[in-house]
Image 1: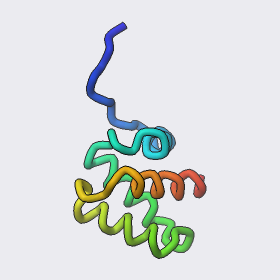
Image 2 (image 1 turned 90 degrees about the vertical axis):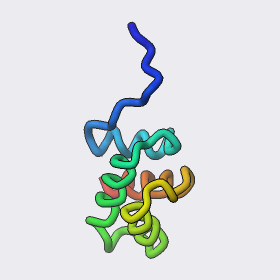
Image 3 (image 1 turned 180 degrees about the vertical axis):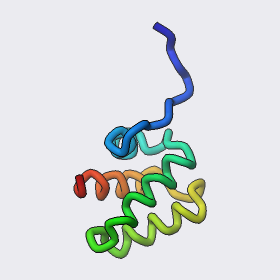
Length: 80
């Protein structure tokens, strides 16, 4: 078995949510954008703060810290 140093991209939204809540610092830009889009699709369920974080993540995924990514992950997990 090989030991991969680069994390693999999350295949399903379930994998992405788990990765965002447990290891938010290792998400790729595209995963952050995908998570933000998922949170924004259910806008009436996300708080204003969560919507603002998701919108910021769409514009500049590099500028969103791990704690805020984790918040988006928790919101997405609550919607499942």
